[in-house]
Length: 206
Length: 306
Image (cartoon, each protein chain N blue to C red):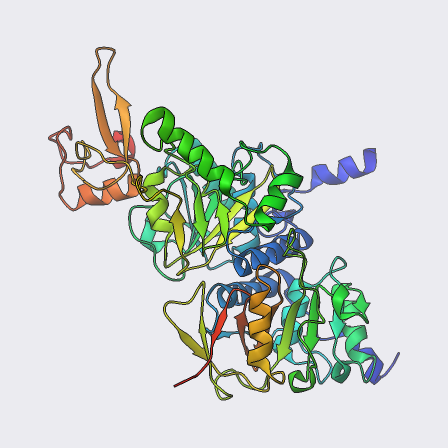
């Protein structure tokens, strides 16, 4: 107890101001979701164990609780530290099954095999779907995606990286399932953007 | 039982969480709001809480506002366009007390506008959130009382019944007689109840700059329309949708092309039509616009005059 061991760090790095911080993070995320493609600043309000990033952990700490199973990708489950950090700070159960997850956190989007393994909800209850948080290193310097749909005036672009393989094909399949489908939350360094299922990806033909 | 009671008695209002709701409830509402934004027009079920006001007084809107409001927000609350009626005043006071936020009656200054059934005449701008208090969120409810059936109808995009209802209006009255809660289709998919706004306001929902959130407390539903989203009022080719038209301008500020309330003046049939949006009317009068029935003396005491 005298000196802090690596295991002790899971008890630290949560919200110092749970009420204010979660509201600030949520408002940034709500604006990002309402205006897909726009990038919103996230304050550094959490300090999780690596490789979970500050922005992804702030989002999960804002959204997850005992009612929402969380799935973690293999990059986050190499040690127990991240699992324990999320359980301690949110109370959310960690699930091994993508299809059971209310939220998924993906630290290595380039290794994510498929988006359709997550819960897409049902035709009657399309809200019972997984919201997938992708940790990306940039939201502006990757391969540009051209987006249109609700929340977007005309068209907009977003350039996140890294992204899952064959992303445009996978996203079009996700859009085909509307109103079922997953919603993507892109957690960049100190920033957040979103691609709800309603967003359409425009293929660059010309 | 006595011990907790004593403890409660020693607590004061300040021991409520910011914006009244506990954090777990806010998280649950926030998750519902995000799903609602992702599926425009779809009614997301949520675990509505009892609020310190009766159902029908805007508990759904209050819960949505409580979940999104922050210390820097500026709140405006309107009841049928008016900032000064009981419902609007008490909800504004509720958040001023429980969240300590600034409140305003000026539409352009507000970041969150909670409304019972009107959209302000002043066009909303990006960054504003319009929160509607919704009594019956299900547009098909009066046509089909069973929730299991209406849910299936939304799932299958089976909205023929709604068109039959509008057609029956035409068959009986020669026109679509629905004047409020006029059904709309959001982004070509979900038929949505715009809450009982007059249909005059329906066109303002289409491609709005502001995010629109809808909360129904008693019915436990949240839904949303993101900015720049298509919101189309249902109609027929030979009976296109049209909004109400008023023959005379506002009697106080002379405004035309705005929604007017009828005010009965005496028991001899005297009446006047005035702006339903009080902020719009007051700011026009402050700019020097004068209606036919506005008194001659300059409006100094606005509060007293109303």
